[in-house]
Amino acid sequence: MEDRLKEDVLLEAARYGNKILVTDELPDGQMVDQWEPVTSDSVKTPLQVYEELQAQEYLVDYERVPITDEKSPKELDFDILVRRVSQADVNTQIIFNCQMGRGRTTTGMVISTLVYLNRIGASGNYFLSCQTWYFPSMSNLEIFPALRFYSLASCSCILFY
Image (cartoon, rainbow, N blue to C red; front, top):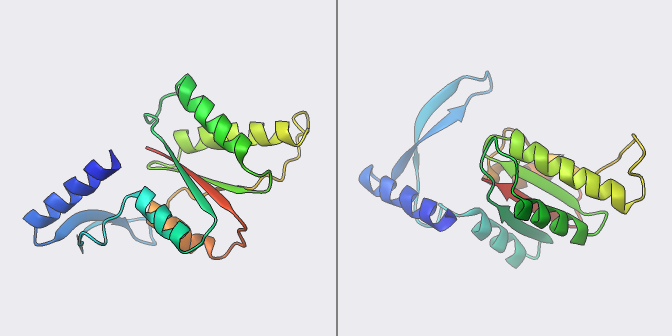
């Protein structure tokens, strides 16, 4: 699906002088349309971005779990999330990101928190210092510059679409 979207973006760009129309949000919250120049090298799937980071020896991992927006995850989706969170070191930071930044991201964070609490034996405690990061208004390409402010030994990212 990601590769197909990349192809679609490049086909659209070819029709419009190697530009695509994107909507951007200004600091005051106003939404504006603007033409963004793109090339086959600048359009990347999230997996390609993570592979480039891994090639640069960043300790990151990537899992794409396709979940329909505003829907509950299927049992298999839930199992994938639980397995991936359970396999990560307990000190690993986990990033959840989806296009809207609401339902699917929140679902992932709740699952991660429950697994984390169970792993540390604190499932009955109300105090939690969990290392799950949420960036509600950032695109996939904006996440990593934002992380430069954090000292991440290792990071897993789970994206929902």
